[in-house]
Amino acid sequence: MRRAAATTAFLVLWAGPPLASAAAQSMAIRPGHDRPFMAIAHRDLSFGQVLPGIPESIASGDPRHAGLFEIQGTPGGVVRVEFLLPPALVAPFGALLPLEFGPGDGYADFSHGRPPRGLQFDPRTPLTATLGLNGRLLVSLGGTVEPARDQAGGSYAAAISITVYDLGI
Image (cartoon, rainbow, N blue to C red; front, side, top):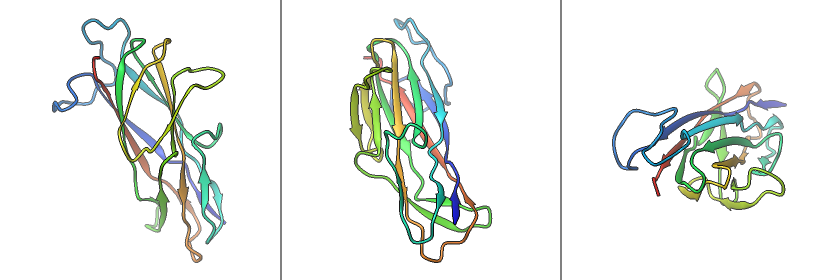
């Protein structure tokens, strides 16, 4: 058995024009907005124990293994979410475990409650979404690892970057 360790998230927020060049913001308040704009990584995407030669998929709706991010801001605010997704998980000794993302591996929940209200999306492409009435957007991320038949044992990990732009709309 191989252990595909959780991926970690690196969050970048930008509360200015989407094409402007500037340093990352962890929290910003734009004129006319009454709440701070921020993103929080709640849970890593985790594949757990993986067997050689057997692909393992995590659905974006998996409540324990899917990555989970929360974006907060002004209710009704429009944001653009972009992921930088790695092609593989990496072991400390350099072995690679291929990682794939596709349509439906992302889920944006605007309701932040029950029942969930949102849409599935392809995390390889940007998502433009409106924050819910509570000023929040939950984004979950699934994916698939493709271990080789002779995959080396050990823990594997990679960083996933999420960039969130406040479009000011």
